[in-house]
Image (cartoon, rainbow, N blue to C red; front, side, top):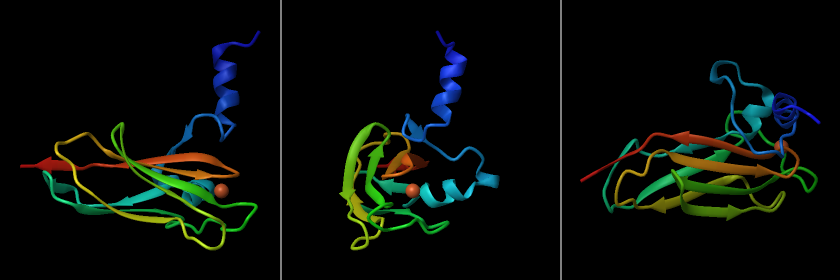
Length: 132
Ligand SMILES: [Fe+2]
């Protein structure tokens, strides 16, 4: 029988277990740079007004885009509220999702997820405030 600590260490080494995040923004690894979804959006938006959100993977360091290794999907949430998703195919699409959303109140942070077929799911977030 293994302890919880041993299980946690094993999970940490398995990029398909849970969701991966950047550990230290000041000292990102190449793996983190290639997979972190970068959210570009206004920090403050008006209630009920559409605004553009861009989620890009590979902005800090290019991610491979070939059949054996590519980003399969990108998703956007406002906290735990699902907003948008884009499925991708290797070579013919790029991992950049541009979408317009409108929020009726502050939900918390915008959260983006990107899934790599070889390196699992990666998450990042961005502050956003909804004003009247
Ligand atoms: Fe990857």
